Image (cartoon, rainbow, N blue to C red; front, side, top):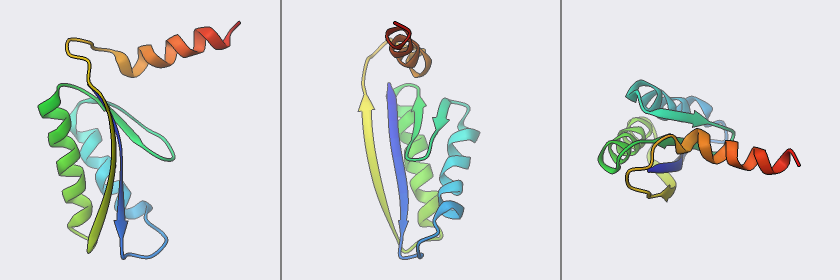
Length: 97
């Protein structure tokens, strides 16, 4: 499955990158395939391992913020791997025309 998620600390002011970095660190240390952009971090793996990483990422931010907002979108396709790259490659082929 692919999960795109965003963890936002609330009640810490406008500058949140320091807090978000705690969440991204959890993702990167997980060993799962991942990609972070300006709005979301996307990770790929099976249901249990992906949801465990999301939970730990939220907990990392919650350890320093009084409140946390989580936005999550999932593409659940059992037995499909490599989607983090292949979905983008498929799109790029259409853009080459």
